[in-house]
Image (cartoon, rainbow, N blue to C red; front, side, top):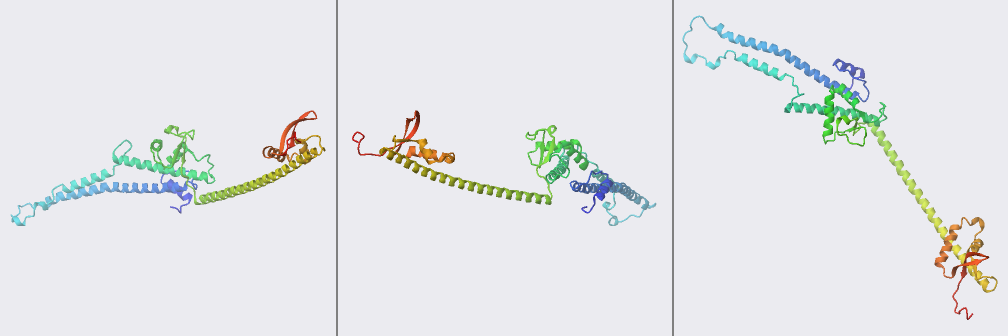
Length: 372
């Protein structure tokens, strides 16, 4: 069966009365299974025909043998009365067959053979035998539908050679395929869909409506059918597994590179903060020196006021081209002096007709101002 070419497979199916569709990589296995089934059905029909042809000859032979057995005692009976025989020489009565006994046996056998060969129509019957036959036919239909949907979904996942729009196959296409392969009617197809909806079992077939997010409850709302487990070839599975592995490795290295870059950025940030903090302490030290020197100059009558403007100190310590870059360092130094340096007091004075903040150097003294 596996050695048949596509042309031989098509001729075999046509010889058995089945007209196949296009034979491709996805339908070749299906048509091979169909050919095996059709050959089995043809073999059963031939055996049934031979039994039907042999039954009349068997009945005629049985009737002829029965007639000969009925006529045999009459032909063998003598015209004259036979001499009396002794009782012990007479054959028992059971040794002689009764007339018509073989004929009745042949008729019973013939009628039993005819009864076994009668076709059984289970379409409208509810007995146990017919229920089992209908269930088997339904399961076979679902099996063919599952194989078809799994193959189509696998092809869609593996390059989509048939140019399918989606893995979800329209209902009409699935029904047409089953009608070509299994010769099933639309009523059986609807019965199979109804069984899927009413059953709580996972048969590997999803029924979807117009909105895929909504649950389908009736057959008339089913728009397409999709396989829950696509059937893919070994090459496709290997390529997909390789692609997944490569993607995972790339994602891992990208995450690793991101974490490494983040660590470098954090280290750079920490180093800049340390440098900024060190620069702030240097600026605080310079401000203290400037304010203290100004106070010493005032004590020696070299300065007019005992205080000095904050902006004046800034302009003295930081050159113009560096003031924007050093703004954060200066602001932190001013904040540090306001909260952590008791020798420098921040005040507000009017200088040259304008209010401004100033720094005044204060140092502890053992004498009061009046005594001084």
